[in-house]
Image 1 (cartoon, rainbow, N blue to C red):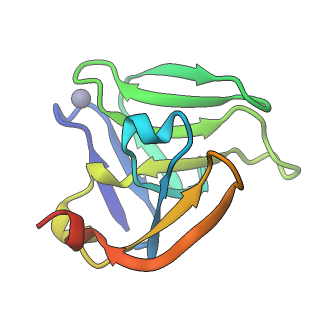
Image 2 (cartoon, protein in one colour):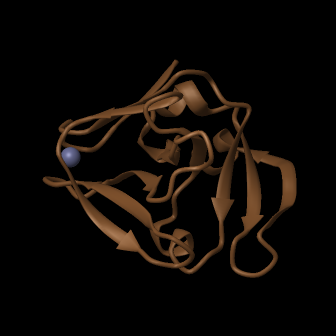
Length: 131
Ligand SMILES: [Zn+2]
């Protein structure tokens, strides 16, 4: 299991496993936030505790981006539309985790701006950008 906490400690996310990879996306929103995402389903692999405020992005369906109401860290997002089995895709912002716990995780670069495909895999680890 992995946990992440906003700067003030009000919001915590938990991920039920240690991921091999994280996603850095260049879409119009992710490149501004600078997030490192790990995906799962909300209420299943991903759970959160604490009061958040939401920025709702409307593209196809919608995505709710959750921020700590106090310190404003972006903690996670949840897809507004459920998939066929009723679960909502979600992702946690790995940058809120303890650096030592995630240092060996590799960064996948996702082209969310154009092709919506992973364009580079297993190039660098988090320890390469946080030294
Ligand atoms: Zn906070």
